[in-house]
Length: 111
Length: 112
Image 1 (tube, helix red, strand yellow):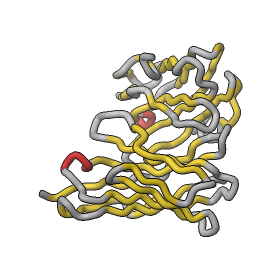
Image 2 (cartoon, chains in turn green, orange):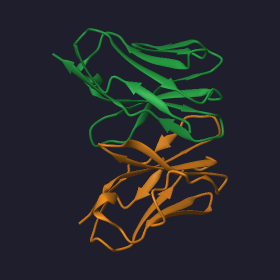
Image 3 (cartoon, rainbow over the protein chains, first blue to last red):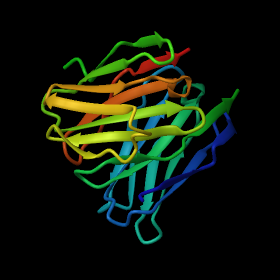
């Protein structure tokens, strides 16, 4: 069945440094790739998404890249801040189909 | 819009009891998802509906779990009988086709 692998499971970076989270997906028909941030005790919330007709997308300190050939996509956070500490989930989906999530990455920002 | 609304927020029940979780999706959204979140298994998709019709329930753990969507503005997830291993946070999410999914605040279920 469809599967999304996410690495690493935990990540600790110095404040101000960059963080990178990587995901791979199995369903080659997937065309929508959202990233969610979940703070402790809260619901997951979308921070950025990318569609299969685009290779890269940026929003301030956050960027996502997509390699459809390799079925890889990544989240890049630059100039990390304490409020970036959270669990991040990648996901893959076809338009009218289910959204499959990765296992999550717990990101900690060291002061 | 008030967003996706789930009730109750917290539920504590005894093993063997029936539990019903409720969800009101965002108006105009045509897909609804039920997820279960645990430390060990992350965000598991249990079932999803398109236009009120169940499309894929392969994630439902066993026959004790059932879900319904009688109309576009309401869905339920029922566990009968409940077991301690069902303890988790259950999220409902909704979206328009191909768009961002919005999550409810979740129901924290504890089965003792």
